[in-house]
Length: 244
Picture 1: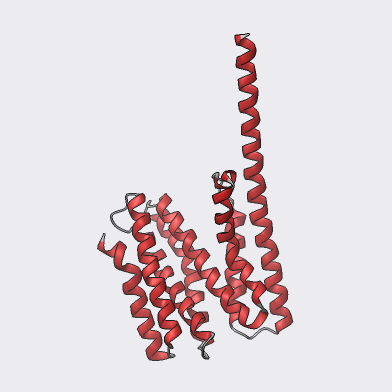
Picture 2 (picture 1 turned 60 degrees about the horizontal axis):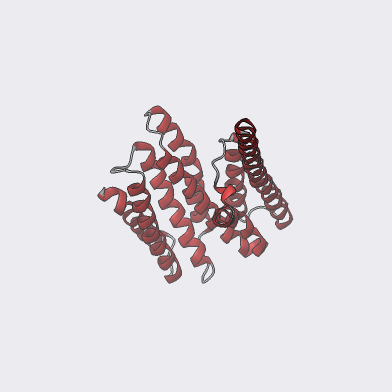
């Protein structure tokens, strides 16, 4: 349980120290990194308690590594608004986190340790990494790029008011493809090598795909709830007719 609780803080502290010693890290980066570590520790502890997880499995440890890398991306992103940062360092951390996204699922299947906790942990790390990368992208392409990073969180907040949005949906491989596209496009933009018009076009296409993916999922949930409500009404009417 100690590893579950302390993992984000230990990993991020080590990574921040490494970044400070190699490419430099300012105060904003340290604050953002420390914040990510503390918040990540609290959320991971709560999730592990809710799911009854006493220790991280092999795949979860890979995901934890991805979370630490995403925290490093967030730290460099925060620092970039106060001082120049190393784009190669940020891109390297993001690329490693994206590459490991394929590894944790493979490890989970190979070790038969797939779980609801692991799937949710992986999802949250993906969402946070995309949020950090989209925030970095606002510096060169504009604030609208942040829509990519906020989309998933907006969907969750909407679910607080609309119960049908909290309904579970069947897994779709296309959702994983779209999520991967967001990470790849935003990482490519972060390199600064592509001309600005090309970067704008690529991010716009990625955002359109993301909107389609979330829109399709919302539509499925709405139709699912509607059909279920219709079946309930028909059943009640049938019971009333038989009783009459």
